Length: 148
Image 1 (cartoon, rainbow, N blue to C red):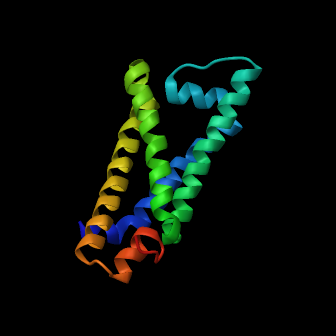
Image 2: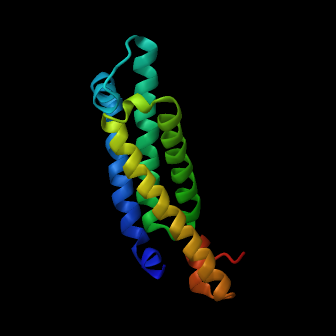
């Protein structure tokens, strides 16, 4: 699994860029809902909530890009992004299966792939740290040089 350790920077950059595309919902909330779920909701509350949702998702994307270039926060960023994506996946699969035929279905597949990559990276780094106990490189990959 050394390949994932060596590739995580670009995995995070690409994942972050894809995730940032949801900023579209902050600019055009009704078209974003229509393209993602095939439906939209109306009213001032919906407008605020959807715009906020778009910004929050874009912030996760920004965190992924930031974490790609800052190993000291990488574990935290991957954990937060992974949990956020798992919640979305779970909500769609449990309460919104009817949206799988729209872009939400594509998002579930892409997010699941990203969560898998994030999890594999975390496991690979922890495994490397255990097998190389005391190794500064393994410790740096986990948390920016801190030993655990």
